[in-house]
Image (cartoon, rainbow, N blue to C red; front, side, top):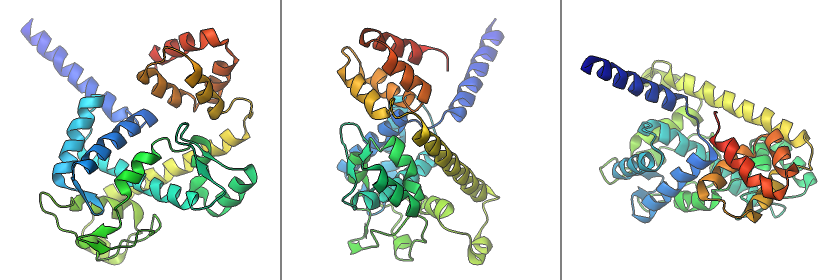
Amino acid sequence: MAGRNARSKTQLTVQQRESQCRAKWTTSLTMIMVDVMVDEVHKGHKQSKSFSKKGWKCICNEFHKRTGLTWERERLKYRYVALRKLFATMKLLLDHTDFTWDEITGLVTATDEAWDRYIKDHPDAETIRSTGCPFYKGLTVIFADSGTCNGSTMHKDRLPGSTPSQEELSCSDSEEGPDSNEQEILQSVSSPPTDTCRKRGRRKGVDGAIARAISEMAAASRLRASAITKCNDNFTITDCIRALDELEGVNDQVYYAALDLFNNDAAREIFLSLKVGKRLTWLIGKLSGPP
């Protein structure tokens, strides 16, 4: 009996690990991570462009406590780098007076003509057009001081994908200083490989696999955003959020999970087509059902 119980526990642990490996970043999980990082910024655990080793340890522990996911530090760091690039994209977008970020809905509003003109030159902003950036306020806290290192001014407006300067890579790596591994991650996903880099150390194809995965994700996001813009404008994410805000008895868990659900065209149409009194019941049933 004891042996059977031990095997059952082992199988459960393996299933849990496999489930976590398959788990993907959602808006809700990203908002939790952003909140955790903002707390660490306020605690003084972020210096220049990076969190300290102590800061990353706290981020991992708190993220696990709030989500139950024991993701490795590198997985959170890759998300951090992606958020850093998203912040740069948002900042560049909002520098144009045609665009306005709505803190309540998280969406960026502009005329269709302004969007079409901007996306033609900045295709990375296409996803922002449909999904917005509900955690942008937190990103401004996290990355507001990303242009300094040991008190010296750095290239704050360097576009994502450009190569970091030698000065940017020379930040200290003490226990309270920036974690240099984050710079390796930034280079692996942002900088094109050079002969020198290849000679200094190959990571057995890991960097290449990560770059390809990010490229595929970006391509999938562009295709998805293109499909969304062609759907019926009668059932927009903005309308769904407005209707959700008008419902009574919606807790935070249901609210943020519903935001992810509204990425689905059919779900938005069903939600807005239902009578007001039945919307919350449908949402709870949909969110608690099998994936």
